[in-house]
Length: 507
Image (cartoon, rainbow, N blue to C red; front, side):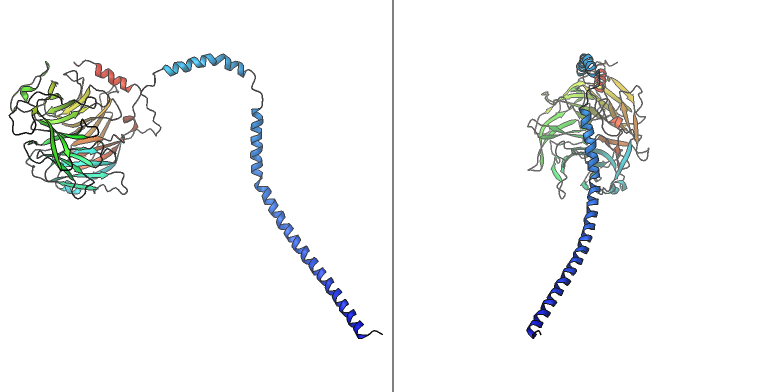
């Protein structure tokens, strides 16, 4: 018989063995399930990885094929062929390097366009309501701002009528064509305008009262930087032309002004004092005007030569040209020391007679002159005879005369990028663009803006963006036109064609 202690120990051992077996069976079942599930997941992951590597394997195989091809032997006969033609190819390359067949050719990588289209029509409603005309337009040196002067070109007593100068920045976001970015009120009509060649905020202007002004558009409260006022040195007649002139000190510019009173004045700007200082003065007197053998000029009426147009030579800093009310066209010199035959009226400098050569006079006022930026001896002129005349500085008679309009021609200007192209604004409301490289004397393009009954009084090519042309009219609008590529891109041999025109003898 077993004792109680033995029975207890046997029962405890039996229970322990059963619990161990149960634990082993439970662990085994869990392991199988978990491992089976994880194996399935890992297999799926491996399959996806295999799919991602397939493109890399294909690229590698293609690269290997290319490398193998490079190791293939060269085609039979290739080396012998290259040795036979080597001398011929070298001779042709040397010949091409010395050729001038493509001299002057400018490659255009942009889309070729033959359209002339109007991008903007700028208006200042207040000026239009008063019937003011656009008298002058000028682009800033950056090519993004257009300045516009208002006044009148018709007859009448309007010397006391107020006017303005407006500017628009075409690169400004949200351009308002009927609201100028800046409006400068002026107590009298503005007859001339010219933006500074280096400083985009400075604009020189000439007034009907005879005053010359420089505005600084960065000073919105008081934009007047300098003003001549009314003194013994200033003009007494309307100023019809202003231009910035480089001075002897590098980087500095003066303002050259010309008036119908017969004076051409060179001013320096004292920005600290807010005034002009007269640097040099010239007076055009009929008895001191040289006359060529072909000139039929009668000295009658007033003794003074009223200047209506002026142009600076970009090639010779001593030369400038003037056109007059009576049709005179003169070449002048800044360095002339001949005293002018006029009585002294208290001027601070001595008046000099600048005219050194006379071209054949026109039948009426010369409204515009412009020197070629591509040839030192060529310039164009236009006026009331409705023609544009191409001149050489070395000959009294024009080389070419083109009938542009049955009305007045108010302005003529060379293209800044095409040596053979110039444009003319007419009293019939058109701007005609001529190409001397064409056989036909007709205009290569004609710009008509708004009512044809409104004269095109002024225009200006954009030197920074030659595809843009600004046109002002008597209806108070300024049109911004985009020119076609054939009017702005220089063709081959164009400069040599201009040279041939300059060398011909006038009839």
